[in-house]
Image 1 (cartoon, rainbow, N blue to C red):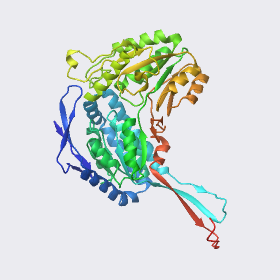
Image 2 (cartoon, helix red, strand yellow; image 1 turned 180 degrees about the vertical axis):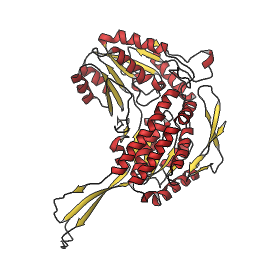
Image 3 (cartoon, one colour; image 1 turned 60 degrees about the vertical axis):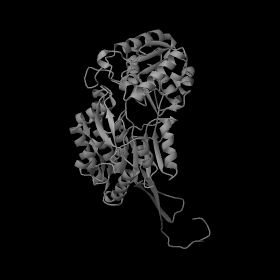
Length: 490
């Protein structure tokens, strides 16, 4: 058993209350680590440290100096990817090969935003008033509070931390209480990279800790990833202090296969969209729209792929589906499967908790495929966050666009077709922050990611992300020296 502490002002510290909580390995049901339950006093200590660092050495750093530290951090992450990935797998049950891939991608985000830190600039504006010189400055927003989800803790954190550091902000993060270890391991690397004490702080705990953090008056911006329902609570808590928010929330993403698509690639994309990560991803392609002309072939092929997936220990390279992250998530997913059956959807594969002897201690649900689902059914409208695919038939472009957009969410989507004109017609009409064409589940530090409608506010990654961690200041300089009427606007 490992006993972790929080990370505040450059040091590992315990909670002032000495209260701790357990972390359970979802593969074997065993407690493997404990963490402090941060109180409001602990949160205040972390925010104060971040404020002190922001007003002190960090605010005086140049973009080039921040970039050098970020590149050093990228190097340290690259040297420790296996440790970081393994910590996530033990806590959330996702495949080690997936978490390793995520960990290996992290350095590219820090180096990308290091480049933006070095090249960030304002603008010179030529106003209609010829006696003024006007320019803008992009200045850091200040202290950032981040709350990250349990499914991909390090990459979700990096999507916030890298642009915030590049912009010159300081940071307090509360990782999910289900997955805290990798964030604390990252904190050690931040310190080793040479960042000043207080620039990066980690508090651990559950909902009350998060509420204390986002409602703290010393926070200048909140960056949250999680469910839409929780995001609404975060936004309300931040509103009392008019704190800026970026929200990356839930999704119920359409994955559309036309009858002229390369079916082997499309079905593989469907597997990636819903069974990779065990369906525990906000961009899961859980609504699979299939043209009626290929409905039978796609349905049977996907059902077979689901039945053939290798379920087991997520640490093993051959495993293709690990456990769900925690017990409440297991019950939630099973509840949706029961609802799908009850509403008359055709169960093509899975639908049960795994009864294999070697998996009974873990939180395993068989990969599940429902066929001939109606778009209005619960399993087609609500985010399940598990390995459950709903196949919905369609016939025309107009019909599938209407069905795809008939959802509260708008995070991601995909179109599979060999007709490039059709692909771009559909992409223009889908209400989603990301549209993949003949691909699924691809991200980049240079490409913005975020949602329409109930899937969020703001964007992560790309230049847009760094801009969200800055304030734009306009500077006016009068050049003529001539007095003007004080009772007229400019």
